[in-house]
Amino acid sequence: MNTDDTVSTSSRVRSYPHAGLFIVVTFVWLLFDILTKRLIINGGYALGDVFAGPFLGIIDFRLVHNTGAAWGIFGDSTIALAVISIVICLLIVIFVFTIFRTDPASIHFGFALVVAGGIGNLVDRLSFGYVIDFIETTFIDFPVFNIADIGVTCGFAIVIISIIYYSRHRRCGYVSMISDEKSAERIISKADFEVEHAEALVEKSEEKIEKISTLRDKNQVEDCKEVIGND
Image (tube, rainbow, N blue to C red; front, side, top):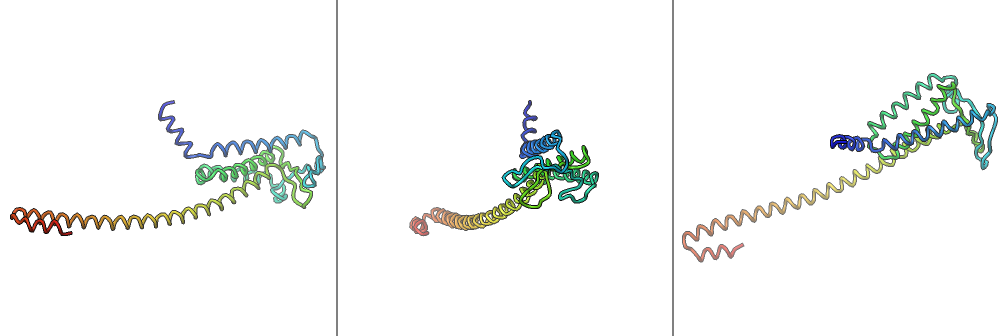
């Protein structure tokens, strides 16, 4: 690899510092979602039956086929939801590598979970015509969900919290910057005053030197001593 290639690679890394994190998290969470669903499919469980749990009185596993979106809304809209999922995932990827490319890692982590969840449910819709849900809460009445849904929900939460946090952090940094600017202005003002004072001293010294030179030419020694002795 020559020097130009090295510089080019280094430049790309600086331009997309969290690209690796985004890609790895997206791949790992998507793989996790797909594997859990394949285990359930291969288990031969009956639709609607609880096949595991409850665990700690919190959740159990019950197979559900969801032809809609979250909470079962937009039922039997598989094609429309698939198209929407594709558009949203593409937009997020574009935003991540343009608008958010230099933002903190937590934002990229959150968006990666959202994209992985969107792709996971998209694969279900295109493969089966429905989404495989199996995680059911037993302590509250809540729609059955899956690993992809967890990624989407937690991902959006992480992104929103990160944006709020870092927005406040940047505002604080801006206030600090303003404070630093005021300090700098005071320092500059003091420096300007000292420069003006120094220039006045130089001008006064030049006048004194010129006067001494004139008196010396006239052999007025006593007057020269008087001039030198004055401030």
